[in-house]
Image (cartoon, rainbow, N blue to C red; front, side, top):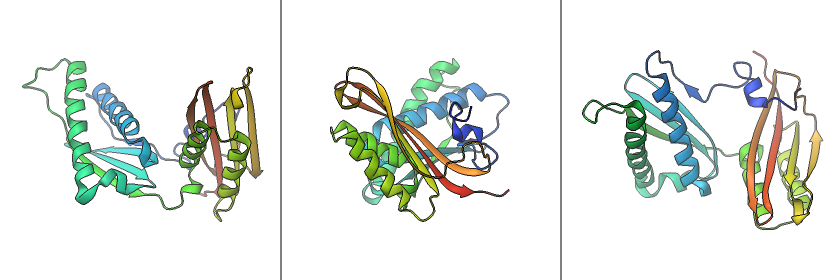
Length: 225
């Protein structure tokens, strides 16, 4: 069953934290919709920024958007102009989409203040999503998948904090007529141990033969609570 369960969801409140942190008894629907739109817009429009994850925290009158990336300069821009433009674009999008879904009049509708914080990830080879993005990008550039997997696994295992890893690709590999799954594994990967700190990510690579799914698991030891 551990291969059927999403490793991050399975470890919430054990070794992982929620990526949306807020409570609401009245505007739950609107808040969920805002969270989805914020994440989707950032990931769709900043694909070259190597974004690992986006966390959202809400207070009474504000929403804090925390972006974890290995390329903060792409998001921040010169003198912070990139962040300001992103804030304007998100406000415009949310005002249009969320107001329509809520059914409120323009004069009665208001959005919380957006605050954007960019945090740099220095060890990108130990982050499952960043590794998966790199592998997907190389597959889209038609680099042989076995070479990509081996090179990616070697870079992950070179990190001193990593105890084990697994990289899996599935689809019409190298343009084969029949889809199949190939994987490489190194070290220990205890999926059934909930206290094991396992990072997981799934990314899609779009090729001329169709979509190829890339999955990455990285084991970083155990967390004692």
